[in-house]
Length: 174
Image (cartoon, rainbow, N blue to C red):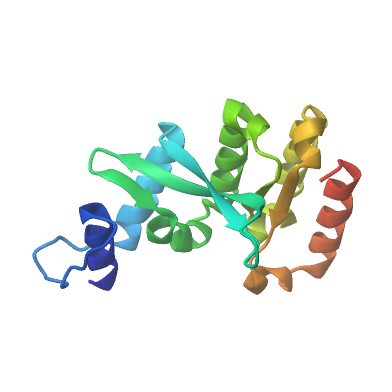
């Protein structure tokens, strides 16, 4: 209910609140997984570049790339679909779609530095890593401005894969 109330408040205005009610239908993990599958196959992923600024002077350090799903009701924030993506086996497909969308975006060339968060399962997957190496090799200028990050919870899951991944992307200039 809290998630529904938060999404409703976000849709209403920048400064609003909503008291959770039981009127809205519950969105199940299965619903979220299906919404993500549909978004990935229907290319309804929307990326936003959020500036990350230095506190003391406001200088932009980089832009963090955030994913949203476009629906007829508006944009669905990552918090509504990202947690279940790993559990449903969709995290690698989501990471690939985010990166492919970024690579195809003309706006990506205008930003000085970009950061994308990846799933631990993506960096552990040799197929994903091979795909990413190929994509970065085709875009050396973008690779030099791209930072790839992992959530802290995933960094220790497979340290060998993390070391290999870091070595591979560093060699590509990332």
